[in-house]
Image (cartoon, rainbow, N blue to C red; front, side, top):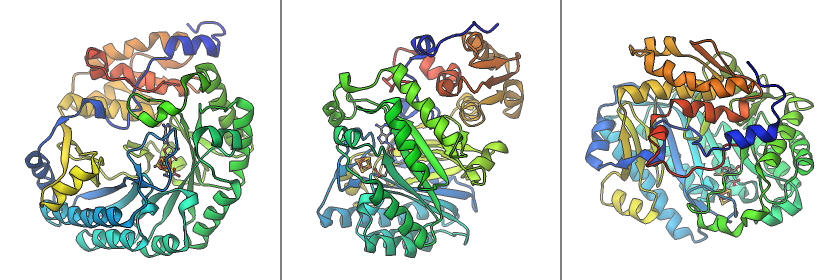
Length: 457
Ligand SMILES: C[S@@+](CC[C@H](N)C(=O)[O-])C[C@H]1O[C@@H](n2cnc3c(N)ncnc32)[C@H](O)[C@@H]1O
Ligand code: SF4
């Protein structure tokens, strides 16, 4: 039975637990120390001819935004950037050697930080090394994250030479008061100029990132930002809730807790942005935090149940293996997850000495694989058939069904439906999808070692 007229405020009070974003399962805080030998063995075990995705992490920026939760630092000198790029090139060789030149790379994602903070010739050289060491089909996707204020003519020329097909522009908010509070100044015109320049190169697949829950934001202010974002005509728009984790990201302490909107305002802001994007914008909601034009491959992947969730968030990339390159990058291998050391100096030292740079990871158990698939389908499709999933993995459905029964309070609040087999998140439940996925997270249930996550909504 659905509780009558459950208000947003009471939903938040009930479900404001701190839960992971489920870009992996088990989630990164549960990774344990992992040696080079183990990682090297995992790479060597990759089947010949396997489809691979590569993630290249660039931990440099021209500016440090106060809210930033990424692994990055402001670096302006060229020397450390060139040294890092040389090590990326070396790491590509080390990885290709372990895999035995067997991989077919269908997707390369450059993230950061700000990849375009690298000298232009370094970006081109790293991409050329990837193409030299792996087989890359002509239609392979090359995606890159871009800070619109650091996109000069040399970087644009490099993107063209690298064969970039998709670009993601960081916006966050166009409101000057908000920009002041988060230490990120970026005019609408600058962002529009970057989008036009990218389209001029033939890069027609554009994504924008927005954030709600920042200081000075209100439902009215984000309505204006979302409406202005429509004018940029992006194919996809990601709308992230600000993750305030000053215990992990010290510079976020410069954003005082009391300046942040409360959970009810965060939910109101998320709802207003959604109304604008779905209404006048004509975008369709994808998973927890993405919107895509109906013609975009992400919207199509959602409607065919082929959307995936990786460390980069939602993706249409179906390659089952992701290899991380660069400091802090995380790979998904058949055997398990492997993360490179987050320290740039430790990364440089390991690679320069001819070693791999993995520091942490986790080997996947059969139960991890099953629960990972359940959580991925809930996060992507907002629905999962528990007995069918158990059958696909040759597993007993009973433990999943037991965990699924925990959805009862969500059902009572109109956030989910459960017929004893198929679990479905309702539209109203979309903002709480992480809480529902968490029902299947045995690591979270163990509680004692639970790390602190950001707010759910
Ligand atoms: C690597 S950055 C994007 C590229 C580029 N560095 C820029 O800022 O334009 C990736 C995105 O993560 C999001 N992000 C960063 N820190 C966040 C936080 N603490 N909470 C929520 N989203 C965050 C922002 O939307 C940002 O655009
Ligand atoms: S949001 Fe982007 S530009 Fe700002 S510090 Fe983070 S990675 Fe760098």
